[in-house]
Length: 322
Ligand SMILES: Cc1cc2nc3c(=O)[nH]c(=O)nc-3n(C[C@H](O)[C@H](O)[C@H](O)COP(=O)(O)OP(=O)(O)OC[C@H]3O[C@@H](n4cnc5c(N)ncnc54)[C@H](O)[C@@H]3O)c2cc1C
Image (spheres, rainbow, N blue to C red):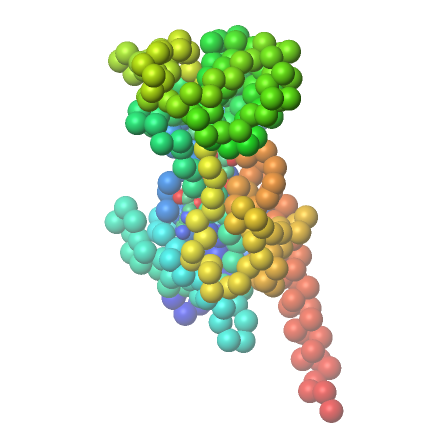
């Protein structure tokens, strides 16, 4: 699509729904756009993605493939698999990006007028030996995404944070056969416990030894005291953090969680750098929300680039100031 010396309009970092939706709208605005994606979908642990209008129940990988194919139908768009390890501001404007190729792709050195960050979040699950084996199938993190399939089931909510009562209240919309497990760490105040009890939800504050199951089917939570509480699935509250080392040199404003601070159109504190999806605060962490944010940012990028070229043309017409 471009030679290494040719400046692109936009480099999108991250090929999830946020980045792909932004890229689709950018190529349709005739902006030469490169999507660089390390191809580690946040929801890779799950088999079915829920709640995306017209695609409810699609495989997460299929959703992304459809998105990539749509972008690559346009001459202006290209998607490559690589891990961006540095974005630097160039003298005179624009940005340089270096990325290490993955899955047999070559390394990339490219420049663009605009950088659009859509690299999502990393998750850290509570330190329970078998939790990964059940994550995405019987234990989930997004209540809105996976609550429906767990309706009225005997559920656990496992977490070590201080927002467990709030999440348990939300979850009680789908099942009141719910036990909150703090693993001896998470905070549920006495007032919160009373509130939860009124919804039929109980709290277990004992440390967890492991998840119990047979042939990959979860059957309960084994506590360190040896007792087992029967549960067929539930929800986990991971810790979320964006991995943004590659933009450290740009000095972007971040919030207390490390997320990139943006305005309502996805502009960051650094002109020419935009962000969308789960790497920005706050909002439901859902596929369609990230895709919507991508479309919003794309419209802002296109308008800002027009504004920039009009300003440049006007300053040329005006000539050097005396
Ligand atoms: C287990 C699980 C199940 C879920 N199920 C659902 C569901 O059913 N329905 C729903 O609506 N939501 C679901 N979600 C939430 C949903 O996955 C996210 O809200 C959504 O993926 C966010 O989109 P995004 O584009 O911001 O980021 P992501 O989808 O996370 O995409 C970010 C992309 O950036 C890439 N990347 C990261 N760093 C770099 C780098 N340095 N260089 C290049 N690329 C990079 C990653 O590899 C990834 O491909 C689920 C989440 C989890 C964890």
